Length: 291
Length: 239
Picture 1 (cartoon, each protein chain N blue to C red):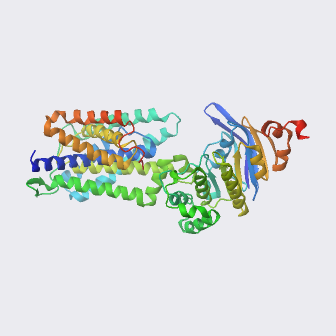
Picture 2: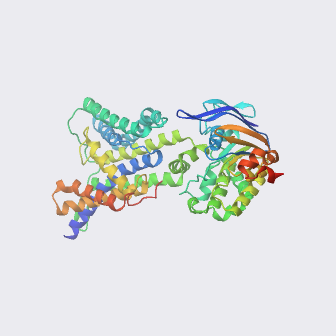
């Protein structure tokens, strides 16, 4: 393998990995704090894709403004999903299965709703950034590199909020012991809603970054949900940092696989790796490092 | 100060507390003693709002607390040290303690921290340590410190001696007296009758979710039933 080819593989892996990390870290944050597995998480990504398309293409807004408004809206939708769909179920003693059923139902509802509202055709956004960067004999569009840079910045910002702010402190406290957090006066409901909003914003950011290079369609969230779950399991259930690391690892493994195998084998390799990890380390690669 | 009147609690269809009446006056240490599964922890959780009673009333200074959720009760002057410490294990000791002041105005945190560290000076050298890595006794100190950061007038303590060495039991007992000396009333539960009633001004004996005996600490220690069942003293030997 030549050096430029290896570099291309590595950068492509990191780019895919950054999206998996964005989606997976959101799922991990929600699971780590609330013990809820949100099967409608992928649809938040899909909705964000359509919203940014609507603002940036249909209304012709500046991309930055369209992105900010999209993130605000998708964060609000995430919060509303928690308050309306999930919070009432958490009050029941046997909530775990009910929440799974409710979020699967919500996922189907949102996919069907998207088909009705936006149709079934696949759409794409124009590139946000023009130009090409030359790296050691490799030419890479700025648009693709920007995915990696922006995703890293967003996850860094999220980590900063988690570990350096009072909101992050109460989120971590609730994640580590919800009853003890309640006993010191931390409103668990508000924390859960905030975490859903943050998680939705991370998924929305993934969608915005992906929309110019992939297509926006009603089913786009499904594959990212599966990869997101894989990342959460690899990273150690509920570990934000673990999910970020596992996202990049999964991206690199996929990129390496397409160097030696046909592209259709990419998911086979990724999920075989997941199963192998579960055999060897059932609690994931970074278990015990939850938020 | 704190009164529980006719408290009933159910877990699903099972009733675990039956019309429990208790009171804690200002400046008192009150013990709830009873065997495993008698409902001691549930009494404290019901008082703190962590478990909703199915009947009865919780009053603080004559004010009904039914409408105050668990997150609001620290603002009214109540705090709880949960069973088995229940620290936030991956956070530092400092973070754990400061979170105890969550319900208080932020401007009070620094002063409260100094007050708490004055009462528990050994914690100063562990402030940066990860809470989950401390010994059981040190963790109990952190849990007490976290409870005190709410500047409570009544501190509820769920099995404060559980899993501690005899030396640490003495230390925690001394700390409880010191806290009480600062004007904080304490309601705690414990399975050891001698320890409970020797430390407390008054006590309650709880069996199968019902209060079957109450009195001053000394009265409880001298009661024949307590002596026979919980202190293992036979009547003849007692005479």
